[in-house]
Length: 260
Image (cartoon, rainbow, N blue to C red; front, side):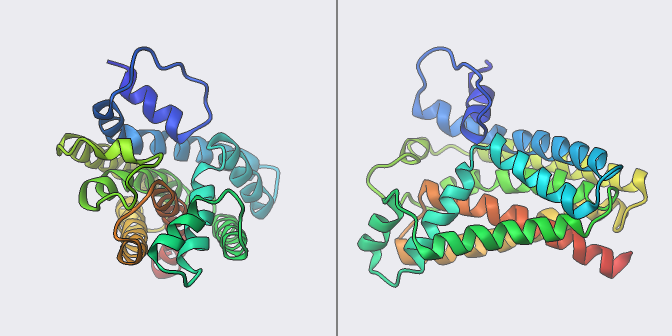
């Protein structure tokens, strides 16, 4: 019973949780239904760390530490996907060559630039938020980012004949997609209630606001990549997660300006 949520933890983080028994493609696909719950836990922990650090450190310094901790916990997995995707997509090469570039372990200029810019954007946006206003972007935003792989797998073909993410795509039932939506909905409600309790900008709809914008922007970016590659890959799933996190934080800043 615990194999699938355990798989979600092991694929999304570096937390050493043992997985017992043989893992089937059905287990891999079903584990994606649990991804937003892992995102919720990561976002809540990040908000807790940020809240504690801002009691004795400037917000910008606290934001750098939070992002450092998050990248360590996730092993930089999603950042690696972002870098590989940007190297391939912006190479100007045809589809097959772009896929080869994405698979290459060497990192190119566009990958480095993308990683630096996305980290700078995250740090600047989180550093601009108060403890109260950071709750919704971190909790709902991190859950929304990890809700993306399920629709990515369900609605787009895998761009390669084989690869790390290919095994996730062999089962095509709607259950995990619906489960991911349910956990995301729970995260949005929790974020909204916390925002309401803290009196932050946007109040009860803050979680919904950041989640919708984060997913919309990330899905549009992934659709553009799919148009070039003829589908998505595991790297593009990582791109979506990193982009959604950054957009969620920026949306939180926009909400403060619009409503605060």
